[in-house]
Length: 569
Image (cartoon, rainbow, N blue to C red):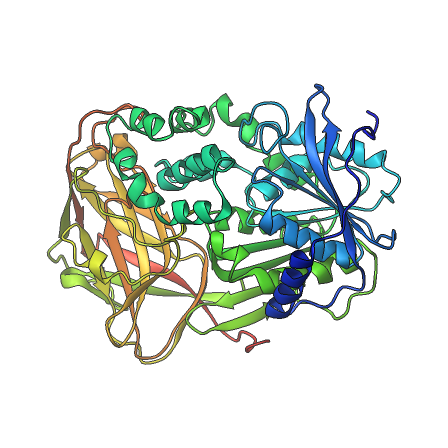
């Protein structure tokens, strides 16, 4: 493959407005001052192996020097956010190649989410090798889908690769879609709609549409059959959505091209991972860290987890993330000595407002057990004898609604759950006020002795921190679609592994567990009929029962931290 030199636009310097914006953002985000000016060459047609052209912008230090090249591949255009970040890197001496993936923003071919990024990424690197400014030092960077493009490339790591910076990036879309057994509905639907509209809307319009997505897409998520209602909402322009929805078996060959887990075993270069406690890809970021760091691979990997949702990484997380990226690239791409020794793990403890530097994740913990009791109590004492059970009626015609959590939409994150907990289809179990602080670090586990009168049912559990004024704020949850075959048993022991968390409940607060039959439309509601996903036209309710007895113990097992380092900057 040869470089494409003909019909390329000349280099341009950033406009005065861009310079003013960069200066303002650098002060706001407390970024170190770049020692260079930058220039950019736009819309370079980079060839892929099948002959299509992938439009690419090249940002370069104005003095012609370079500390290596950062490759960014994105389906979201080469506009505001990526443009600002690329200029930051160029002003610090790096060449940056920002490429629109196949079928987006002028790049040829058809957009088929995630499916073509391995080959197209290799072709982008092949083009870089032909460029006179490429010095053989390569890094990749970017969040979310841009993280996916990196994992896809890492299934066969280029020899020039020095490092990867992967922010809130997945490696297995089957896990996101059906890891709980229920389809991840609202996130994928709103994302698909955004993709179909993004090249026809301005930045301001996109922000307004994102804020109104829940209201606008309500007829689709509540429609029957779901697949047809979604197709109509998407104006039949996102064929991938129906394909994802209609393949609930994660072992199906359909998901093969959308699963690049093999990359985790191929990586040998240093990797910087960044996640958020309320990010939808949190579990995959932590799995990536575990594979690279904790299984004897010896890969130089760092993990940062902030108090952010997926979208907040680009807003609330922008400063600390960009500062960390610049330090990382200086050491691992430019090859300069580290400014200071950084801890392998840096996590934010919600509830305390503290960042902690740790040698590994999770830190050492001990188990603390709390038992579900009749009357909504949550105690450290095990039930002594049989007591009354706790039941609720789940109606898919009025499904238990989503309130915050690990969403892809703007209503993600930590919310006050009091209105949700007032519903009759939500059970709550609450401790007395804590006499001392409780610090949870790791994966809480909820074990329920459960029965139901409909084999087709889901269970959703959530942990909340209840403050002195009664506000109930979520910090960890889990969803599970139950196996219909298990309904033949009179009772069933369920184990739900909740989201990993780092959360401190101060003395005087209370710990609360919610138990309900779903979280709609975050997850597609269980229609109660066993119909194939997306095809059902009927709704059937379910009565859920939680049992409390010495021989039928329902409980929470918490990983409680001790002797953690104190607050860091």
